[in-house]
Image (cartoon, rainbow, N blue to C red; front, side):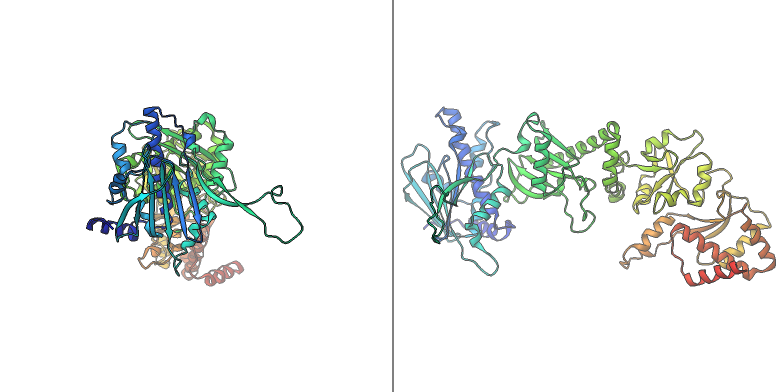
Amino acid sequence: MKNFKTESKRVLDLMVNSIYTHKEIFLRELISNCSDAIDKLYYKSLQENIGLSRADFDIKIKSDKEKRTLTISDNGIGMTAEELENNLGTIAKSGSLAFKSTQEKKEDIDIIGQFGVGFYSVFMVADKVEVVSKAYGEEKANMWVSSGTEGYEIKNAEKETNGTDIIIYIKADTDDDNYSEYLEYYKQRELIKRYSDYIRYPIKIENEVPVSSSENEKDGSDKKIETKKEWETINSMIPLWKKSKSEITDEDYNKFYKDMFYDFDDPFMHQHISAEGAVEYKALLYIPKKCPEAYFSKYFERGLKLYSNGVLIMEKCKDLIPEYFGFVQGLVDCELSLNISREMVQHDRGLQRIATNIEKQIRKELQDMLANDREKYVEFYKNFGLQLKVGIYNNWGMDKDKLQDLIMFYSVKQDKLVTFKEYIEAMPEDQKYVYYATGSSILSIKKMPQAEKVLKSGYDVLCMTDNVDEFAIKYIGSYNAKEFKNVTDGNTGIENATEEVSDEDKPILEFIKQSLAGEVFDVRLSKKLDEHPVCLSSEGEVSLEMEKVFRNMPNTGDGTNDLRAKKILEINAEHKVYEKIKSLYQSNQDELKEIAQILLDQAKLIEGLPIEDIDKFVSLTAKHISD
């Protein structure tokens, strides 16, 4: 019995107990090692013309439930006793890495394992492991045997053909772990399809299948159905994304999407990217037909599948896709700088470049769709526009320049969704601002009293109906030197929108302000109204719409949902209601206080803001109607 070096024992213990998150990963690691061994022999055949082709190679998996053994075999390059000693006797010594460093880059050769620790993941599920190997061209075979950190032995063995057999003695089941499932066909098939489906050589499982009726004549008795063992190829071998685009139909892309991402609908669109140059990678990206229902919940996990040379490394790599494109499904396949576990990817510049390129590719595809297929883009935007607007709001507006040309809002004048650029192109020469209004619906915005004067002045109003809209607009600030202006702003910038206050009006407005103390910031006469007697506007950073959002937020104790707008009650100076107000100021100020409260509550109702005392509002309204 030979002992591992002290450092190797520590590495092995750490790796088995800490590095790998899921025990099932062991099968992926061993299959990848088998693929490497075959690659080495195939490369040798290309160099020395020894008459081997890809069709000569395969990887086989066989279970013996009685002995509790799982055997994984390849017919690759094999190992001598010395190579078993060097590659398996020293943890973190990688034969694949050494082989790769001596070879010129060839498109047909991809060596997956580079750090020499993946093999030892087998001890997460094994009590003992035997590796029987015969190197190509050698007469003798050798066996490496180990039960983990106790050490290992190397001895002579019998094996007819070149290659390696890894015999795994599966651990007994515990209350926490069902190790027996790794001996089952269904589990092996599931793991191969998940992690190793695109290994380029056939991965075959020995499976028991019923004998056909022609082989098993029925005699009418209750005799047990006979079975026989057959080798079944499980993996697809050739990834769709590595095929030429000219070979793939839309049906192929759609079927792949539905199978891989468990969607019943065809995707809205797809992108197939083959990037070469400083960073080489292939990617398949899909936009679903509908946004996931749980997209904005804490349970939604964004990210692309990450492959390295056809082997699944991460199920959800969120670093490959920005949060605002989190609805995009897909995968990336590239050569990676991996650390000691394929589950953990170094955040190197290569991966960052890929992420940057993917973001640009998605954005360009959407920009092209907006420019060339407006109807299709509108369909996309109705499903995913909210996600783009949230992207502007998140990260303190850092991504606004990337997204502001992709968002759209309904135009009252043009009666359709328009971009900021299209809005500005249609503006009259004298218009200073991009006007917008927020509300629960387009219809409610059209009926807003604050929008009357803006629209009658010949200016357009953009309708913003999502809670995040005004927050996003605040971060954008301006577009092409045109500032955004909410029609509920205290100063809309329209000439004569505010009535000049005479000496006669000043005490009246001050009286109303005092009677509504604590509920309004100011009371003003306004010319921005036409048919409506009053409206609410605001000053400061918190708008009326923002107040509604804050009110509806969960109370976290930080005071956010207590934030309020500085409300301004604007009274139509030309409306007959103001004539009544002036009369009451002279004759019955107690009644004027009640009228002022009714007008404020009506303005709140129009804005969708809550009335603090609804019973009082009803009784006051009933009282003055009856009068």
